[in-house]
Length: 292
Image 1 (cartoon, rainbow, N blue to C red):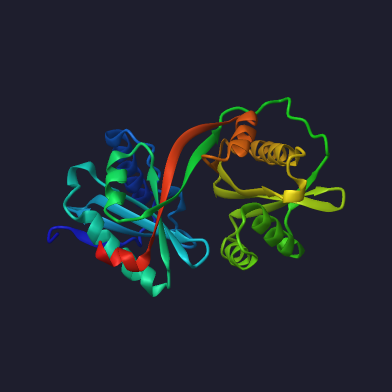
Image 2 (cartoon, helix red, strand yellow):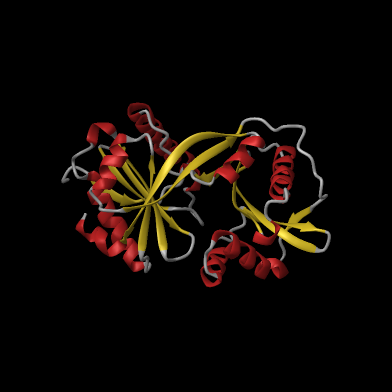
């Protein structure tokens, strides 16, 4: 590793971001995978943390991380196909692990494309446990026959809605209220907007939109109170948000869904979303990664 240089990413210029994007595209082409390392989340303020491996001025390795709850770090990584099996990922992770320990992170969550053989081979050496699998879905069409039988009012959340957000999310996803409250507080950046759906005077669900660029939005944390599920609220809430985003000239709209959640998958497909990729998520305690 004497000829390589591991550096903390400090340059977030358009040129530097494009260099990382080019490495991502190269890895995708060579591996024939759906690799996505979250290039759009690399920002000088409020963005993902990242380390680069440089060789002769060329970026040949990349690892980034972010946290939504100050407990678990989400990891994305890639190494240039011509420089693999040379310890680059190991050296990058040493720097990341030291940073995670300083921030008090307890676990790491790696996203591995299901169709990436190098990624799957690498994760096996970390002795990580499979946590979940998700489909990434992109909006490819928007049916004009989506109806609004309830006439729901969908509006931006206000400070007074926070406890409902905690209640709705924790009940729908099965997380504790304390974890959910912490998560919502740590994902309240300006680019992320939460909407509350109301049926008359009663809130029935919530949905969040992360505007990662002027034309790209990611829908997430979409849920309906358990007592209100199975009535068609979800379909109407989704239709309202997609209509709103399209009206704002948002041309790239995506979301993720757990692969075994057939009910949600059917809803998204009926609303014009199609599966574009599948990812596996592996979790490992930070202390165990010191063995890398």
